[in-house]
Length: 494
Ligand SMILES: Nc1ncnc2c1ncn2[C@@H]1O[C@H](COP(=O)(O)OP(=O)(O)OP(=O)(O)O)[C@@H](O)[C@H]1O
Ligand SMILES: [Mg+2]
Figure 1 (cartoon, rainbow, N blue to C red):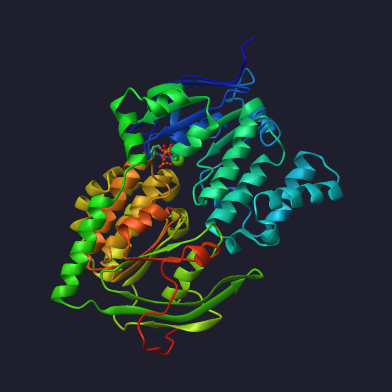
Figure 2 (figure 1 turned 180 degrees about the horizontal axis):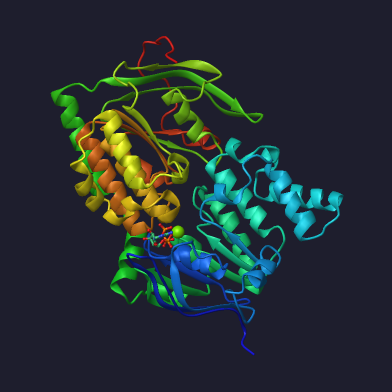
């Protein structure tokens, strides 16, 4: 009898137009975590779905996936294991949460219905878990009232509350600040130390911390596999080497270029203020997110917003765009920021796309509505390393990273004057992420578009931004910019 609780043998998965997973074999044993790193779109999430017995409709497969020795093609069998023995944390937290139920109730239901805990006992356990992940004050909220990182943690608790032996975690730390990411990684590691764990991640630090076996994937095949400390310190394949190099890459060159072009631009024609924020304060969920915040954003400028998960970064961005109101303070917006010229790149790409339209139809509608030049589409697709075949598919039929880059393409097509990019490369591997960020910065620089860049990656922000606004606890001791610039306090524009 084998030691493996999951055995994937010669698995291939393909669509009408492409091979997605090519003759892949992977096994999972108790106490031997496996971590998959790899290129965006390389078939990682599809593999995770195959283990859960839910290969998306329209895709075909051959080979075998066995869980506890039995083939997952037996739908009733694998379903009987869901939650109780096998749990999955999918890549998009919103897809695993009930949108209209408070999250503490959702986790409580797993405790009572799946784990059969008494109601009172379940309640105590839920409180303890919410506290552990720092979201105890937010348990009564529905998912839409949570930040991306909070929803990610709530989804993690839902997936793991029943203590299933096999855990498949797809990008479990995206959207989390460093401390929260470390907490979740520790929880995963504890799980992997004696149970079965398959983690899919773009975060090399997560792979390092979890240990065990690391598999590097590209184009549906394994390019390298082995003990984590060996692969992560001395990769043999060129691709794994590039991936690790990109993880440590710095944006020096680009930032200098940007500062330079920014200076040149300001020497030639003075930049124009597009947003002036004065004395902004906002409370949410019993927490003062920020107070007395003031700054100006001018054309061509890149302003960073950093802060812990749930600190209010996206809320501040929404206030700047007029999507949410501040409790006090004012935001003046230049009259050139008409509809379609001030845009937001959402933190969770699926939130920005209608699920029933193909990406091509969505883009065509946009071009028609705004009279956009469609001839730019092919070159943007190429630069963003997106295949034209994606245009035929709906948002759920492309990978998380592909959808994130498509959202960027759509925003750039609009030639905006202001763009708020909320964690714009969070779904991308380090290599594609680095290249995509550089491309994005080049494009906004060419457009002279003002950019608000929201990220947990403080070092990246300091490299590419002209200024960084820190909000939340960091703001007191590490405040680069938290004062009013631009002296005229102007009237609020809704
Ligand atoms: N339903 C579908 N029909 C056709 N192709 C699909 C479908 N779902 C996904 N794909 C394609 O399969 C490939 C692998 O997708 P998958 O989601 O597994 O990538 P991934 O490695 O998880 O990427 P990421 O790191 O961006 O999340 C992608 O090119 C994607 O466009
Ligand atoms: Mg994926």
